[in-house]
Length: 185
Image (cartoon, rainbow, N blue to C red):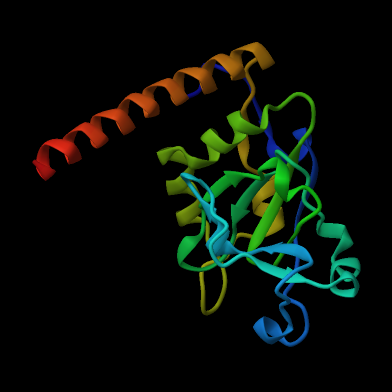
């Protein structure tokens, strides 16, 4: 049980939504244009540009309702990568998402980094994996996402928690790198 008050995610967001794949699928992708973020770009360790697709102005206009802003929380909502979560980096401002990625835009009461860490937590990942729906593949619905119970410490408290988590994971990354160096010698 959380020591903080909880609130449904839908009460502390200004946007929750996913996009679609342009007609024609991968054949419709361009080499330049507006980035289209797909599930392969969303990872727990951060945003990955490998495989980033692009769409033209007309395709982007058709997906204007799923325009990404820097610091939006991006959550994979279908398939084997369900639950992977990251923050949209500043250079992805204006990108779009396809139907496998959900944009979650916190309101000023919820720090995006705190929400990302919360969604990536083992407890929340177990919940996400237990509530998947879909006849042939794993999927999270918008309604389920809006109903997530999120702890809501003060903004300063959220920032302190994020700083501590980042410090601990940085130490862990250092230890893993040291172990790999020892193994290589």
